[in-house]
Image (spheres, helix red, strand yellow):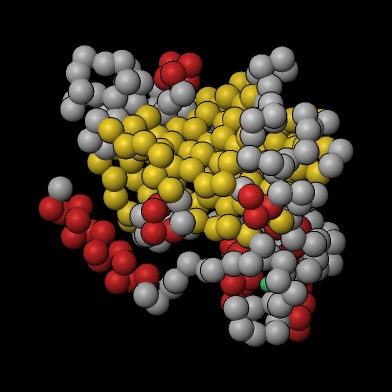
Length: 285
Ligand SMILES: [Ca+2]
Ligand SMILES: [Ca+2]
Ligand SMILES: [Ca+2]
Ligand SMILES: [Ca+2]
């Protein structure tokens, strides 16, 4: 544990120079620090999870060692209310995670879950295992199971409009249709967790972001009517090929999360788009 603590301290020092952006209409947890210091409320933590930050990734090592014989081992979960976004007609949730947890853990709500919903039956629930994802919206609707490549992180994105929802993995459209109801609405929240049900797992979280979908080609990721360094943080990600399965640069589809950065509407984010971004840059945050 001592070495982990040292690692954590070293990471925080580094981050002084590359701080995570503080955004207006987007909540962005980039895991340059532990979840609680990034604005999450701790929901549950038991069976001695091993947790650490390493270069912008949050790691959870979860097993049954501390509370045998199981089931139900290490658990580390967080929550935030979505009250600030009630009634927002264009809402997104995007996160990137990698886990080595087994798919047999999925029925137990493990190894990694991100879910948002309210008490009126609207739910978007994503469970990620090493090589399989479960996506469900409503117990009355078909449950999606999607195979994913193991050993690499994947990016998950949900977009919500009044008459449409869409679910993407690595920018590929997996499912779309009519939403079950308005969201976020009253008493909506988002929760995420790592958990060991019967088997151990190691989860690594790169980020969790949600908020107002930025206007296409605006360059304004956080929808605060300025184009600044906060926006550049996300722009350069779209330009520089940082998302698994998605390529930055000319001729590639940069994906739905990068439409704000595609100034000339040809799907890619390249140096032409960057030139436009620089012209639009207003400075500040
Ligand atoms: Ca990160
Ligand atoms: Ca902005
Ligand atoms: Ca282009
Ligand atoms: Ca473009």
